[in-house]
Amino acid sequence: PNFALLPNDVLMHIFELYIDTTVIPDYAEYAPLDVSPLILSSVCRRFREVVLHLPSAWRHISLNFPEHVLILHKERCTNPIVHINPARSLSHTYEEMLDVIHPYDQWRELNLHVSNEDHAHLYFERLKSIIQGPLHSLERLTICDELSEEVDDDYLEYSDSIYKDDEHSRFLSSWQMPKLTHLGLKNVLPTSPLQCENVTTLSIELTFVEEELRMKEFQ
Image 1 (cartoon, rainbow, N blue to C red):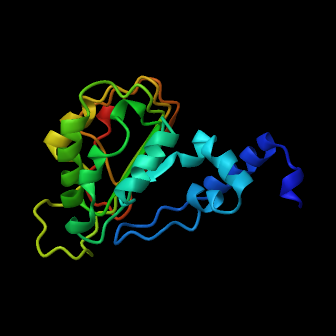
Image 2: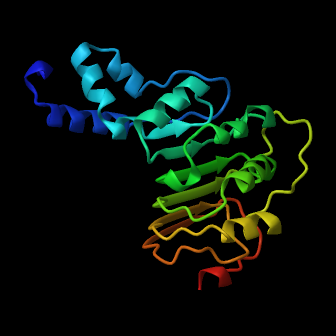
């Protein structure tokens, strides 16, 4: 098709469909994404003009993006989808980049996907210094723990369990999420109730788990 003949609103819709095919890889060294607004903006002048005025094209952010790319996304989109993905080692978690991205109360979605409890600990400790009030914009939250020992770390301090460390569970239970409608948990069960009274979709997935299930927090 001749894209030059398409009106801007149609192009925007096509670009949004394209951006939603984004796959954020597990954390190692940064590699440019196969799908990104930067690719679209480099095609031609018209594509660049449309993409620069399309906030949703910049909504997917990952902590392993270079700082200048994170800042660019921050300038283009106010309510991002934040991806935290498994890392091959503690040295590749990039938790310090949480200080660079949008303020927590602007996050539309948070996908927290970790390799094991040691990696989760780094993120929770960083998030404690960042999240100081309600997450007013958060609509979707996914927390996934691979319970993996196949990482490049020499020593693992925390034992892996579907039940989060009591301190981490209390921190999660302190999150006020008035707009949250979708909650997904994989190999993670809180030991304290979460503040998400408006959830309409709940997904729980447990793999290779031999622990007793305690479901009172979901009653």
